Every structure is written in C-alpha cells, then in structure tokens.
Amino acid sequence: MKLTGRILHLVDNAELLSAQLGGEDAALNDTPYVYGVNTDAMISGQACTLGYTPEVLGPYFLENFRDAVAKDNVRNGGFQVVVGGHAYGSGSSREVAVVAHQGAGIELVIADSFQRIFQENMVYGGMPFTTDRTVVNRLESGEDVDLTAFFADLPPFFRAVAEEGGLMSYGTKLLAGEITPTYATERDARPLNVVEKLIARKAWRGEGQEDGIASVGPGDQVLARCAFRGMHEYTCGMVMALYADEWGDAPVYRPEQVAAFEDHFVLIGHEAVPDFAKNARQAPAMRLTDEMVEACEKNGIRLHGPGRPFPAGVCHRLVVEDYGLPGDIIVLTDSHTPTAGVLNAFAFGVGSTAMAFALRTGLIPVTVPKVVRIDISGKPEGGLTPKDLILHLIGDPYFREEHWRETPTDTCVVEFGGSALAHWNVDELSVLTNMTVEGGLMTGVVEPCAPIVEFLQERRGVDTTDALVHADEGASYARVIKVDLSEVPLTVATPGDSRNRAPLSAHEDVKVDNVVIASCTGGSLADLRAAADVLRGQALAEGVRLTVTPSSTDVAKQAEAEGILDMMRTMGAVVTPPGCGSCIGNGPGIPLPGETTASTTNRNFARRMGAPGPVYLVSPAVAAASAVTGHLADPRNL
Image 1 (cartoon, helix red, strand yellow):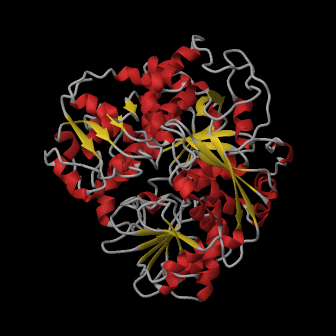
Image 2 (cartoon, one colour):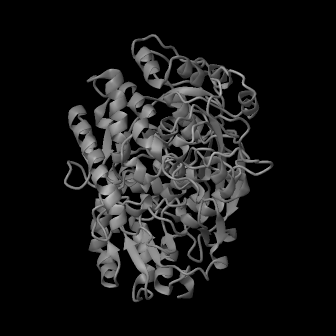
C-alpha cells in the first residue's frame, strides 16, 4: 500500500481532531491518543440499525466521536489510515465496527494495542492492522508498504486464516478435509486452571478424531467445539448473509444448540421512548428483525421473543436460564456473553464472521488467555453487591491499564473463587462474569460452588455436581488477587467508561434525573428484589424518571407474583416487558436533554444509551435510593 490519502490520528484533543477533519495536517507533538476508542464510538447503535455493509455504514464511522466528527467527515476527508492508542476497539463484539472502517475508506489500522474481539474481527474480515508505529513514518516517506508482511507478526492460527483470505474460506477448506490443526495435538499433561481445562477438553484434533488434548497454555490458538451459539437482531442478518455467501443452503451444525433472540429492538416502539429515538431507529430496526425471523425459519433455528416460539428476554439471561451448563463453550455475537461464565462455563462474545463459521463447523477459534484468579473472602455487608465488587475490580490499574498484557494478541480471563461466592446466588454472581468484558477482559468464569448446583437443580431439575470443572492442584495463574469484601466500598462508575471507578460516598452530591433498573446486569429477579426493598414505602423524588425492565419472561412473572412490579408502577415507574431497552438506546430510559442518569446497566460510553448526557453505573439498591432522593445515594441513609 502506498499512501495516496491521509492519516487520521485519534488524539485526545477535540480541536486537533477537528483540524485534521478540516484538511489540516495538525501538529500533534506529544498529544496523547485516546485510550480505548470503543466500538460504540466507531459506529453507534443507531447507525447499526441501518444495515451491515460498507456502503451503508461508512458515512457513520466515528460520528459524534469526541463531539468533533460529523457524518461522512472521515470518508469525505480522504483518510486512508487511522492511528489510535491502547485498547483500540474496546466494548461491543459488533463486527460492523470493522465494516464501518472499510466503508469510510480506511485500509490500515495502527494502534498501540487492540481489544480481543475487535482484533479477531479484523483478522477474520481481512482488515490489515499493526501495532508498529514506525509504519506511519514509512508511509509518509512514500514507501510502498507490503500489508501482507504484517501476517508474519500474527500467531499461527491468525496467520493461517489471513493467508487463506479470511475465516470463511478457511472454514470451507476445513470442511473439505484440507485443513489440519495449526497447533500440536499431542501434548504432555500438566496442572490446568479452570479455563485451560475447559478449552483443552473441547480442542479439535482434526477430522475424524475425538475432541480434546492434554493441555493448553496462554497464547496457544486452538479450534474448540462449541455447545450453545446465539445471535440477536443486530447481528443475525449479517451472520446469515456471510453463511449463505459461503455455504448456500448447507445445514447448520447441531441446530438444536443454536438460538436467535429478539431482544435488542423489542422496546423501541414503547410509548415512553422519545420520538427522536423512535423516529430514527424503529423502521430500520424492524427490517433487521424481519431478516432474523426469515433466517431462523429457513435454517431451523429456534427463535426467542414476544409472540415467538420460545420465551422473550435478554439473550444473556435466557442462556443462563435455559441453555448453558458447566463445562460448555458458549458463544454469542454479543460482548456480554461472559454472563454465562457464572455456570462454570467458558462463554465469550464473537463477531459475525466467527459465528457464521461456528454455525457451519461447530468450532470456534480460541486464543488461550492468561488467567487471573480473584479469591474473594469475607461477607457482603452494608449493602455491598457484586456490581460494587466488579466496578471496584475493573477500575483497578492492573485491569484498567492492562498490566497483564505482554504482546498485542494477549487475552486475559478472570477466574472467580473463594468462600465469599456462597453469599450470592447465580443471578448476583452473573454480574461479575458479565462485566469482565468492561475491564478489557475476554470473559470470566466462576469456580465450582454451591450456588451453581442449586440454581441448575431448581431451574432445570439437573444435578451438575459431577459436571463441574475444577482447577487442578498446582495450576498456574498470571496473578492471584485476594479481595476481602470488608475493604470494598459501595462503588460507582463515573461517566464515559465502566472502569472509571469511584466510591459512592464521593459522588452523593450528583443530581440525578433519570434512573434505569434494567439489562443483563440489572434486571434479574435478585436485582428487582433489591431495588424493591429500597423503594417500598417511598416516593420518587420530584422530576425523577424511573424505568424498570425485567430481563426475562420468567423474571417478569415472578416479580409480578411478588407484587414488585405493581408497587413500582404505583409509585410512577415505567415498567416495560423484557428486553435490552435503553442499555443500547432502544427503549424507555433514554436520557432526555440535560439529564443525568443512574443506571444498573454495564456500559456508560458517551451516547451509548441513545443520547448525550452523563451516565453513572450503580447497583440496583443505589439506583433505587437515587430515584427516591434525586441524587446518587447510599440506601442505608434512607
């Protein structure tokens, strides 16, 4: 590639960004680059409703980024290369973030480090990238840079996929028996932690051979046998278009282990949704929904949603309720798939290409992560919840600044263990695994504990005691962090990033206008009960809006039976059917102009909830107390 266009530097200075977009070669000097340019910033949830092709998404690349980029600025600016800082591509698994780069004319991405899902999506979708910043100087000096040379820096599996022209063509050769593992399948046994054991047991050995190898270690790349695979409206159309382009009408591998979920758009038409959001999103969102329904009917894929054959709810909650089991490998086209790691499973989000590959082959590529063990002791007193704990953990510099990272393709997982797990149920513990991705991690997994066995016995009538996957004695970890719950304060995440941790006590003067109790981290029965305990007998503060969204049909039924939802309606809350809603800007609870939001959701990127305005992430009890007082509040003070 020769530089015939321009280079866009994503520096943390809106004036310098604007100058570049205005055609100036701004003097960047030592201006820092933006840390963690996230996928919501690359392509908004609203733009994602429009489709998934480069032509459709290109104009919206980086729209509203740092309030300096307008629609079509990048494409019309003639930019050919984009340069970012560390943790480029954090956030969602949406592969359309890569597609938006391509549609805007970007041919090369240079950054100090990349987040795991985004990096995989670049490899599988054929977007060249590098962490070598000297390439900028080489291009500017007129050198014709061989982009295929960057393949040499990739691990063996990534390199093999890149050399085959992408993951789909690689999958076709694999199905034809022309591919053998890029990794050694004959290995010596060694003590394995939970994650390594989960991966090793499911590793593909080659055509006609039984799955499983003796060991894996950090940095290995293997193909692993999936159990459950899932999609939702934002992604299903793209997944099945990729699938059809490569394999036509070929059958899906084990379709009984596949489901699609109508959850991200089901609340967009609700009467409480602001007109500006409804008018912009509803019509294109319904077109994507129709694509998903058609694809499910054609391919024999079970469909969850209102009026569909299977119950409605947020996909992550439903996987925990109905599908995941200890020892499984679980993938969905959504970054919050780690929710199911609460079941002692290896669950992680993937892009559309990886899902299409998994649907046909039953396999998913896995870069074996480093594993950090979090050993939790003590009792959760003073209203402390898993939401407080995970916000406290991912805001620690070790995770926030990715001190675990040594190479650009490193990944990291948290293994949660310790005596304190017994104090929380699966609803509550799932918040820990769900939000690991907000700390730049691949996923989280809960070690065997009584709450897992009890949940699956009560929910599905199965005894999974013998199926639980334990770490071997002597297993190694990148780090072991001991946490005493008595030392963890009630915690919030301040606006802009879930890793912006702060003690609640430092922000109790923050006025709140909009309170949201919802999502895969805040809409479980345990969450609604915790909020109800605070709200009961109280009244909403004047001018405060409260939105409550149960996370599944069963959660809604039980909360109705307990009188929780009726009590919330009586005090003036908007109580919706199950769905994702305002978490992604598609339902009641979207901030109105000038509002500050307290939300139990898991992500507070700028405009993530569908409109500008500061968003603080809090526990359900703190959200409820804030709705009563009109400011961020400790429920113990009511």
